[in-house]
Image (cartoon, rainbow, N blue to C red; front, side):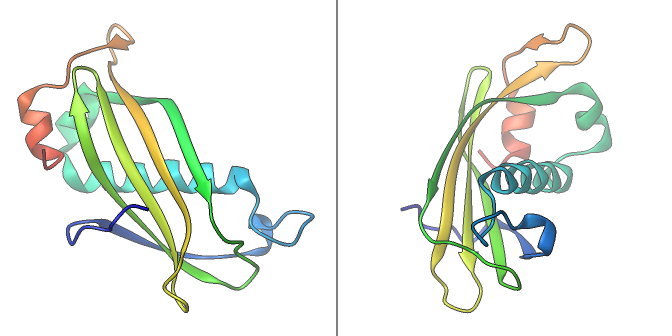
Length: 135
C-alpha cells in the first residue's frame, strides 16, 4: 500500500452510470481513463505552457491493484504524485480512496516515458523538468 504524501495532487470523482459495468461496479478500463485524466491534470498544474509544448509523456506500463469495488453514486478521490524519475522514465502513483470510508479502492503505479514531440522519441528528463515535478 502506498502512503499518500501531503503534497499529493487531488481530483474528486463521482461515480456515474457510464462508469459501471455488467457486474454493477466501476469497470477496470475506467480506472485507466481516470489515471490518464488525473496525470494530465497534475502535469498541467506543475508545468508551464512552454514545457507542455516541449515535452510529451507516453505510457510504458500500468500496474493496478484493485482492492475494493466502487459502485454507482460513490464519491472517491484520486491522489497522485510523481514518485521517481530516472533517465527517460518517470513513475507516478495514483491512489483512489473512497470518501465515505477512507479506504483505498485501487492503487496504481504507472511508468511514463518523456518524448520529444519533434522526433517522437524518448528523451532524458532535464533537471528543469525534474524540479517542476517536485523531484
